Length: 109
Image 1 (cartoon, one colour):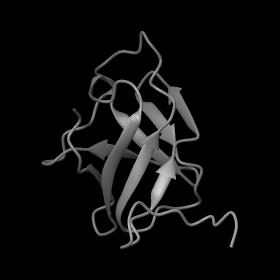
Image 2 (cartoon, one colour; image 1 turned 90 degrees about the vertical axis):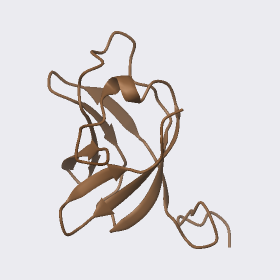
Image 3 (spheres, rainbow, N blue to C red; image 1 turned 135 degrees about the vertical axis):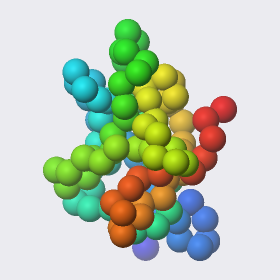
Image 4 (cartoon, rainbow, N blue to C red; image 1 turned 180 degrees about the horizontal axis):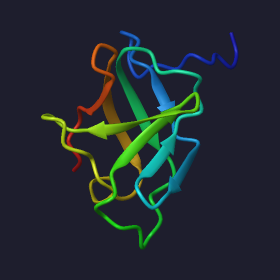
């Protein structure tokens, strides 16, 4: 099979998504995933375009899919900010469908 659209980061099937756009607004930085919806559970996000230089570091980060946007949080519900995601790379996220929370699981190093 050539060109399989279902890419996983390991044999257990953790989905792997690439960002398709980064938009800086007055109230948040939003990374688009180019999906119709996010399935519950863990997934990996590859941030392929960095947040533009000069962006206020205190702006919260959101992930968007299917026209909906949700804030990315840390343990305890604090917002992940633009200062936390400098450059490009991969992060692990948990989507909890019961609370609607997107929680950053991997530390930023």
